[in-house]
Amino acid sequence: MRTVSMTKILIIDDERAILEVLDIYLTSEGYEVITAENGKEGLEIFEKEGGGINLVITDIKMPEIEGLEVLRRIKAIDKDTEVIVVTGHGDMDSAIESLKLGASDFINKPVRFEALLLALERAKQKIAMSRQLKDYTKNLEQKIEERTLELRQAQEELMASERLATIGETVAGLAHYIKNILTGLRGGMYMVDVGMAKGKARMQQDGWGMVRRNIEKVSDLVLDLLKYSKERMPEPTICSPNRIVLEGVDLMKAKAGQHGVKLCTDLDPNLQEAFLDQDGINDILLNLISNAIDACLYDTNTAKDWEVKVKTRLETDAGSGEVILFQVTDNGAGMTDEVKAKLFSRFFSTKAGRGTGLGLLITQKIVHEQGGEVSFESEVGQGTTFSVRFNRYMHKS
Image (cartoon, rainbow, N blue to C red; front, top):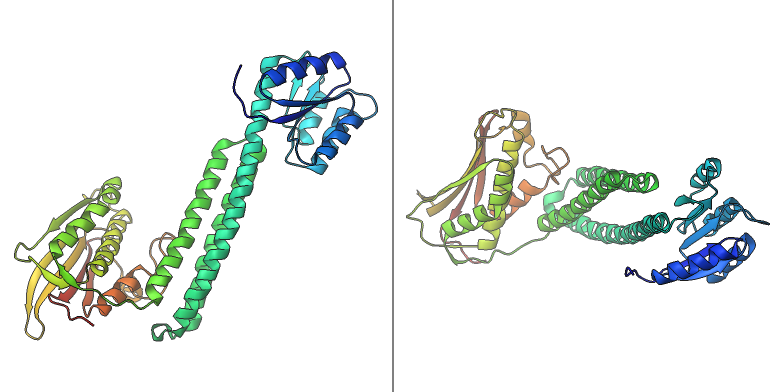
């Protein structure tokens, strides 16, 4: 005997012999069975159980209330209850009508146990998926409420900040980005609903994928807004700039390799130690390296051997003394003059819906918090170089 979880099932049939056989068999298969000898009795039991029954097997041809009417009323009471109808051999019209009314499946008389078990397994899968969808929808709504609250709080901080004097532009950018996310969420939920209704597993999977990706976009937006709006005091420590680069490159190797981009380094051996904010520089490098990899992916010249190089140099400045250069260079798509002019604008992104448009602003903010400078050079079709410079020994605030 197979092991199944106890599932309460109602069997409605006016033939006592069939009821007894199905009762004995399904009980042996691990089901909790309730029987009714006609449609009226079956409906009374179903209503009395108050949602405790989620599987029903009903005959079509019965006195008083026929099986199709039983199906119709059960679906009116609880649309999530799965109903399997039993039809006479060759009665395809009733079988088709039952499916139109929402039946999970139909089987012919005489009932074969193999066919019955298969129909029950399919019905249980639909019930499980329906519950999962409800739970997922509930959790999704809760997460959206939480993210919306965080967005409001972040927006209030943004509005209070001198960096965001142009409030109208900020709100418009936020509204546009959130609208796109909501469109993606609705699209994903629609695909899941249609996939479940039509039994298309691939469509359901694609729908779940859309939902997850857009939830990640909400999370990314909130995190970027918080990073950009909140003041952060640098915490410099004695560290190895080259080691920071190697750790960042190691973290980005998987992304680069996945897209066929070579990620390499050119480190100054004379640069042994410095007094810098490691966490801040790590954030800067990860963002610049990620952008550089993306720039290669958007390059239309697929014949290139794409490469991203991270370089360090110890320089001497007449006014500042020893300066550390962190440089990230790619040979990707490059930027037009129009893109370069908007590069540090809020919510501006060239990644076609993938980026929040705040990444470079966050990079610029962290650089300035540490008293550094950021610059870039770019040429269409040739690539881009971002250069970030810090005093080797940062002053504590």
